Length: 408
Ligand code: C5P
Image (cartoon, rainbow, N blue to C red; front, side, top):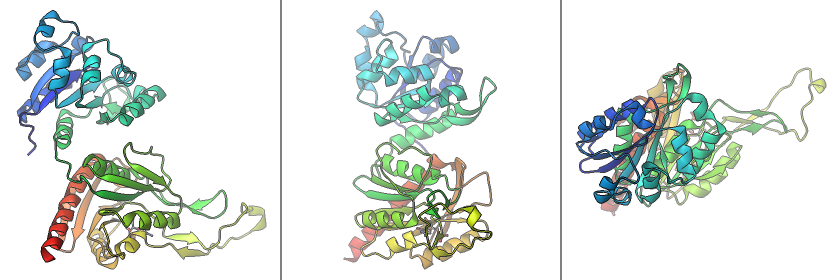
């Protein structure tokens, strides 16, 4: 059960067709016990009326920067100070641009400049507008400034297009708000995450690799960061940007990933091996490009790569070690074998034979396997799942530490 009892949420509504969903969001936040004050931009009011929000929140709705009545009561600075969280949903492309450049020419942008509360935005726009370089740039500026960007979701849009740009559903945003107010369960802890594939070179232009996108590992790194941890992400080659607030180390080969893992895991509390490490590397790497004219047949000799997670788990002292098992059959059996063979604390197991989840997908469903059995985590967005997994891992670390201190 999520609860937002007495949390003060300033809900900014900007102009977009998703503005009608903000009414349901206001209702859900209220239902969880939050106090919700709504600020609307001019264009938001062309989609939905202030009266709707007033009825749903039981609070006066604010629409103007220099409103004599409002300034006498709760002016923009007062509103900015009042909020525990400023949540803008939907956040239009125009609003994101104005926020990124620090505009202060209407009530909502001024509030955002004046507030010391965290600002979260739930973008909603056409998929091409979301993909546009200007919006991408604005979002990276906002993220670097610590502004939380929740969503957008992928799917069919009001204009008929399909792609990323839909506002997250009100229930998902409410869950994000609840997660935001959760205590920092990993405060003061160091978490190392490996992610993505590795690349094992054959010659200067060719390599052996796999289809890992790195999305699950990056989502875990971000979730650990949001839980208050100092996070080091050791990433093989991916197309994902470095997550803000996470120390990202880019590597290519399994050997490089091993070196950085052993070095950083020594002072880590948790090590999460989400990388899809290539199992075999060529025995020899040709210094020059291998020419097809020179070979009618080509035999490759491969050597086994080091097992990074097992090497970390073999160290003393060692962090809490989390391995992954991506399997196409006998999932739980393989996961249990991995747990004992590699001496891991838990294994997160997922079925990669289902192409709708896992590897390149934005969604995943997993099991957590430990020495006592297994727990199922149903299919959900990787970011949301990462949060749940991080909370579970934090709880297990605490149990292990308190057991150890009782034993001493
Ligand atoms: O042995 P297998 O690849 O199935 O095990 C998967 C788990 O082990 C994952 O957590 C993966 O990150 C880790 N692993 C590793 N080094 C390897 C192979 C796998 O850390 N060489």
